[in-house]
Length: 305
Image (tube, rainbow, N blue to C red; front, side):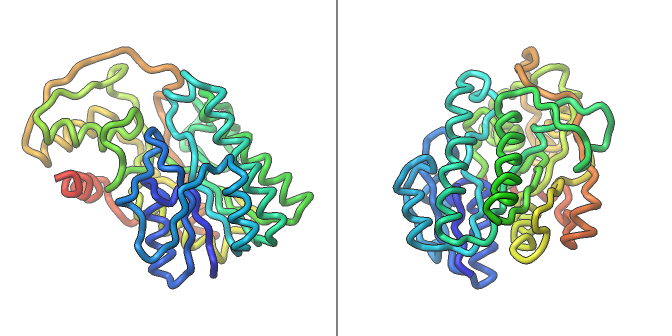
C-alpha cells in the first residue's frame, strides 16, 4: 500500500519507514529536517521518496492530496519537553496545527487511516502503576498537553469524516539514530558522553524511573497497525521501570568507563515514576517487546561508535 510517513527522516520515523519498506510498501517521507527535530538526510531510506516540507505548510497538504496515500503515519512533532516549556506556542503550532493541516488533506485525499505517535507524557504523574489505556491523562508539560489534544482531534475526524486511526502512547523510545546532542533521549546523550570520556548530567536524585522501549519494537507495532487496531489506543513500552542511575551504571559497564556525574535539580515537567501495562497491545495487535534493555543499550553504543 502507499503510505506517507511524516518525520520519516527522524529517529523513530526512519525506523518505521524501514519496516514499511521491508514489508514491500510504497513509502513517501515528509520531514522538514528542522535542526531541533532530529530529522537527518542520512536516516532516509533510499527506497522511499523524500520531500523536505513542514507539516504546517500548504505544500505538505498538497502532496497528500496529490499522492492519495491509503495510510498516513504521523511521527513529525516537536518532541522535547524542555522546548515545549520554553516555547509553548511553537509546541502547539507544530503538534496541533500541523496535525490538523494534514488531517484536512487526508479527508480530501480519501486516506483510510492515520497512525499517530502519541506519548506517555500525556499521562503526567499517574496516581497508580502500571499505566494503561484507561489511566486518566493529566499532562504536566505543554508537550504532553498537545499530545493529548491531538488524540481528541483524531477522534473528532473519525466521528465526522470517517477517517480511522490508531493511537500509540509510547514509553521512552531509544535506539540507534537518536540524537545524542539534544535535550531529549537520556540514553543516547549518556552513551555519547561516556564514549567521549566526558561527565554526564543527572537530574533530580537519579532514582526517577521511566519505561524504556527499543525503537525496533516500536517500528514493529507500527507495521502491525496497518491492518489492525482501528480506532483504538495502545500503550507501547517494555512494562518495566528503569532508573536514570541504573542506565548510567549499565552504560558505564558496557563502555568500560566510569564517567563523572554532575547533579542538577529536576527539570520543569519531569515525571518521577512511569511504566506501562502493554497487555492490550499484545491481545489486540499481537505485539510485545522483544529487545531487552541491555541488548538495546549495546546497539546504541555500537551505533555511536
